[in-house]
Amino acid sequence: MKRLLAILLAALVLVAVAGIAGYLMIAREVSRERVEESLSARLGGAVQLSGTPAVSFAQGPALMLGEVRWQGRDGRWMLTAERMSAGIDPAGLFLGEVRLSSFQLQGARLHLAGVPAEGALAGLGRDLSQLMGVPVSVAGDAISWGASEAPRLGAFTLRLSPSGEGGSLRGSVVAGDQTVEFSTTLGDRGILTGTASGPVAVSVVSPLASFRMTGAVRNPEAARIEGNFDFNTSDLRGLAVRFGKTLVGEASFGALRITGDGALDFSRLVLDTARLELDGNVGEGRLGFELGSQRPRLEGTLAFEQFDLSAYLGELGGLAGVPDDTPQGDSLRDRPLSALLQAADIDLRLSANRFIAGPLSGGPSAIALLLRDGDLSLDLSETAVSGGKLEATARLKPAGDDMFDLAANAIAEKLDVRGLPSPDVVTLPQAGSLTFRLGRTGKGPTLAAILEGAGGEIQFALENATYPAGGEALARLASSAGEAGATATSLVLDRLTGRGGMEGHEMRLSDVEALAGKHLVRLAGRLSLADFSLSLRGRLLPRPAAIPAGTPAPEEPAEPQGADQGIPVLVRGTLARPSLLPDMTGVRAP
Image (cartoon, rainbow, N blue to C red):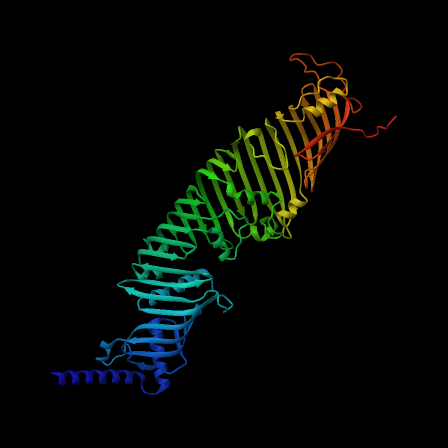
């Protein structure tokens, strides 16, 4: 029995060697050409070998190949490998055939050519469909694409495996400091060529972010996957840095998750039931992402029960020109608008039943953000804020030569100052209501340049305002005119109105009137927007008597209280610490 087994084993070895020797045809050039033809037919594309094929029985019969060059159809991709092992099916050897059944490539480098996206995806689909029918594994150290062959991604692995009519692709790649693992499972390989329908599952996972999709291709001709999509990142700011983008600020743009049901094709993802979670804010609605012919496009409508803006106040203040500690050139307002606004098209409609911005809250509110062809418009609808109403619009429009025109307007009515944040640069009253209308215009290549030379106008009215101090100064000036009472310390302004024109770092104030008790103060001058210092001059006058309702108008209007009446006064100091002083200009000692 043992002798019989030895004879059978020897016969098997002889048949295997004979089959392989016959395949290789002994002559090196002939054997290499035959192997290249066989590999090209089995794997697709064109395979070229630099070395001479060798046979190994170390782990089963296999062809050992060196210096492999494997090019996809139409040059869409190129893979070079230092070594390739092509497994031989032992069963075929008994029939005198050499069947290559599995392939392992090591020391590989992959280059993707820069061809049109649609053609590349369709071609890669055909290539992958053929490859998924064969067990193939690849281990390499670099991936490049486009015109340059310089490595853009590091070590990678690929494993393609057939499974009935379907197949799977699994692997990993090192991208910067992240190791990204990915997998794709198809119910039918014909999905890749648009000839079959079936289930599809995709997963891309890294320590920083993940993307998962489960669905199906229902209509092969539509080339669209319908199902559930889930994108999640624990650090949106860090993810943007990995893609060469830097988000300004420090506290915001952390955790982000987008989930929903929708459809995905070669260039567009639409979530008909989307849910977005950003830094604890949750919104639901519809979202669409599109690659576009010129630039990516984002559109959608999201409704939030509550949106907390507190984490973004630094960014918003920076956009408005509020000084901060951001290094010069690192702030969003210092970046060229031509590059920022041409990066994508956006059409977003956001609504919130309630919003929070630090100590300020209000709602309901709605914001429309439209960016198209570098033209940006932002519209804040009428919003209940601090007992009053606020609405605003802004637009940045291309003006040629990388310049942009800014037009912004804001209107506030009857805001309760007790609900407003108290900035360091101004002293707000303990009570009162504020109304204002603000408009700004400017031109420049960056927001910083626009705000540097921007002009504008403001009209304001402060009513029933109570300050803890300041009344003694007014009483002291009034007593110098022969009126008694200089013991009051609080200051109550029945009404403070005025208008101003802004140009660069200065605001020219005019028609400033303050009504306080029996007094009227009329002022004009300037306010420095750099350090908020005041330089106003005017007069302290008796308050005009109110005219009862129904009183007929006089035949000749009464003369206004002129510049030569009342007590000359000055306002100096800053908005945070203003001082009302007598104007001694032109007064000489006797």
